[in-house]
Image (cartoon, rainbow, N blue to C red; front, side):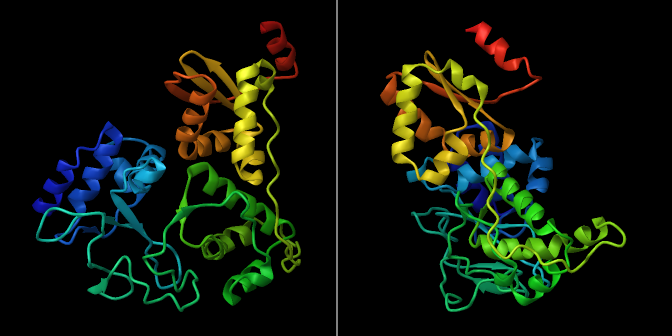
Length: 337
């Protein structure tokens, strides 16, 4: 532990038990330059004794800029093995300056970590690799921002993969490419994952699951069935039954959200959910866990602000997944009204 780094982190006075514990844990593993070489989500969860999902949410909040409702205190740095597989993330303490213990809004000027060669100095905001093509074997420069998966992202065609990934995917059984693509997208959206290049991450995923896909194929099956050559869209979730309990304020909120949001984002996450006002808060009923996690991670602030315009004095927003136990659910909901 670098005492100066840890002392700097303590002075940030991060509010929230989970946020503070995750932040201080990263700081405790950071070197004198303010860079934490490697701590996986699992490592952090075991150390601070909370779930991996709680750690992921805390990391997203710590990394997001203040303008987006975050704290802007860390920056994740992707690290890769020589074969392209992703290693545990590194973390830059944003604002810390070696030797000063203080910081402005900038990251450290340089940090030491093992990125394919011992003792290599990397500047997080460097654009020295900007002319290279991004891929898992040649990851994007560390200065590129990591962003959540766009709502309109689609699995790229097999022909668009790097040669090594194309060779693997073209051997997969029929429909395996589409199924893996849907699982990859659901995980990214559900956990609020962030990457600098989602297509490169997908190519790395193809390599990671190749042996598993081939082992799961039925004996005697076709191993060279052409994979889809067009982007594979993810089916939209069905609207929740709780929409029948919405009132005039709910409709006003829906109109405001639909007007301000991109169409794909509205259709996938906001339209299928129900918005029920209960003073002094808003309860959002979601169609599945993936939508719930995405909305809670990415839209809590937006919903609180939009809801307050519809019904001033809104204090909280909660998220639930609608539980459907059988065909009688819809009639039961109607009787409850």
